[in-house]
Image (tube, rainbow, N blue to C red; front, side, top):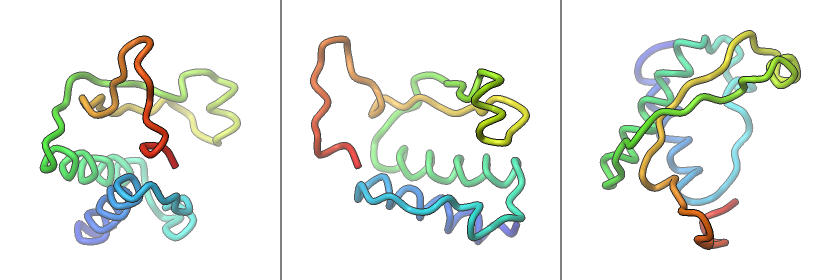
Length: 100
């Protein structure tokens, strides 16, 4: 996929997060999207969050169980970044308006 499309998709995901509006899976519109493309989209979304003042404070891994990998049709875990805006301390309330 070309750089412009990947950036536009990252922007779309960021806007969905910001406005708390779900969007259909990107691969439904772009079935040709590769794993490398998906990570480029993620990088764009992270860059947008950093532009708004968030900080990377760690990394995360998901889809680690074989059962979930099979359910999602993937062959490996996924990796991402943990930003300070994603963290809530134990016992801290999560504002309902931050959820979809």
